[in-house]
Image 1 (cartoon, rainbow, N blue to C red):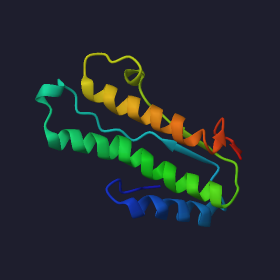
Image 2 (image 1 turned 90 degrees about the vertical axis):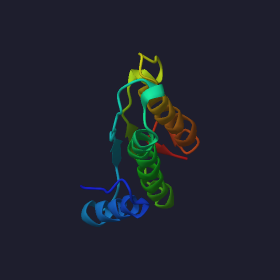
Image 3 (image 1 turned 135 degrees about the horizontal axis):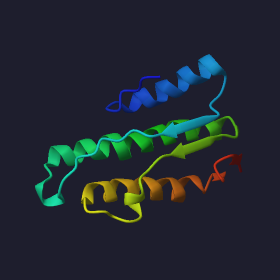
Length: 122
């Protein structure tokens, strides 16, 4: 299913479409990323913003839309976010470390308040 990462409404529309076609949301896989390789001091603000919009804001919006549906419908489900080990152990480029670390910590802190191991609604 295509989702325009620049539109917050597109994520909600994706959840609406998925529930219309399949009846529910069982699993979401967040894996979108747009890396801007290179040294942080050489990175343009435009590249930085694109990387954060795709990788961090997109993950936030999809997680929020699907998570809200699961909570509102008291439905068990899983939200899986793929990231890189660069979020735990930076390997030379500052941009992947910042993005991957943020994505990993956002899901761990926020979703654990609602889901136990990503599959049990409280």
